Length: 297
Image (tube, rainbow, N blue to C red; front, side):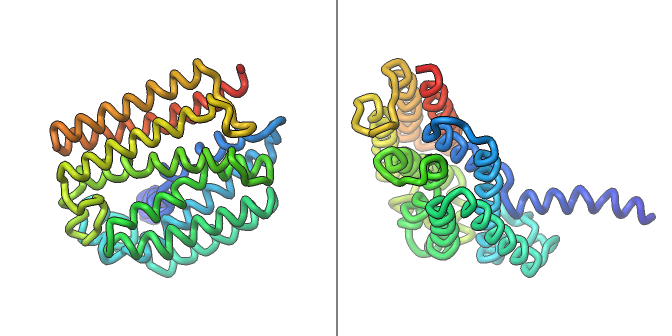
């Protein structure tokens, strides 16, 4: 009987741990950080690469755990979140808080061993996400603007980890991921609109699934596209992009713009989901193109 209980609960504990830290999201953030590191470094230091991956995961995991503690009552109201560990009663707030705090300390310490600036930006990211973005989500659509700041830090964090310097290069990487956040989260806010309403979250810029939101989504897709090809013009210091890579990045950006126009035309949840998937593909592929281009240029 004891074996049966163990076999049931162990996978559940692991699953809850993955969910409280949002492992999938955390790994995608780590991917962005590693891409930024490879762009900034002259010679790859695999120890630093490992430390960045671990520290980045701990920081994102901590932010997600704090977020779920703060929003536990609201999560219980929404279909997509009501089965999370805390609202479902599988994990106590105390346990989640311990995980979040330990992850914060480990993350800051690990990133500090890389350099002070990396640790500082990591700490800023946790603070903004937990203490500013999360409370604002039920107050104003501007929460997405605030949330885009910590969301854009990982790509540039990798460059800072590689160089211990913040300049035009990591600033450009930050801008690229910053502008990308808007169409990505507005697409999610669109197809989850009714569920978000249950929790009282304001995720769309106009507060509605209307043409105004769709137009702003198109605009930010275009801004993302423009920023992504700027390195080809030689304005961004050591961050460079070949003409071929810039064309590839531009085509990827046009793909996202296309789906934004589809949302404007169709005004459907299906179109919003397609844009969300296109945005995820875009940011991943752009980062891969940037890195590959650097090493084969």
